[in-house]
Image (tube, rainbow, N blue to C red; front, side, top):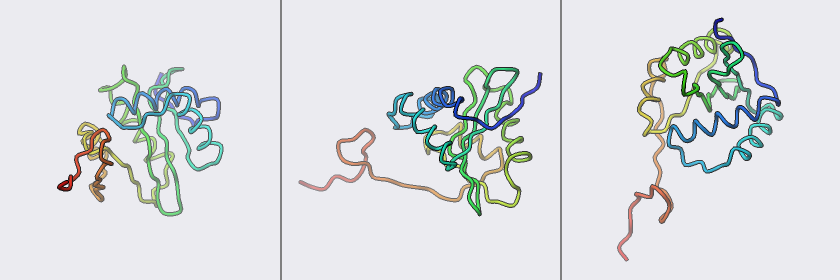
Length: 154
């Protein structure tokens, strides 16, 4: 059976939270939320209509998901994840092709944010047609993980 897609419902929030937790770990994000917290956040986002999620399934198994926000001018992809056992099979490319052709309007700007250290992710998004537009730089608070900012002379 081929891959299909459907919009997520509130009943999908536990699975989405688990997948989001895996995404956070895989990309090395600093988000420390628990699966329960991620589920509560996902429920709020979907209930409010702030975000929509699409599940990609192969038979009855979820193989990928996308979470996005659509405004009048753009579609911003906040989360995209392919299940670990299904990577390197073209699932991500097929899922994105569905989003491009069947879910998202062609008349809107499409954006995605990627952690600068996620080189496989950057390569994937460039292969999907996204181009560099913005670079966010930061100085983390002193004493926090990853703090590499300037230290004044004491």
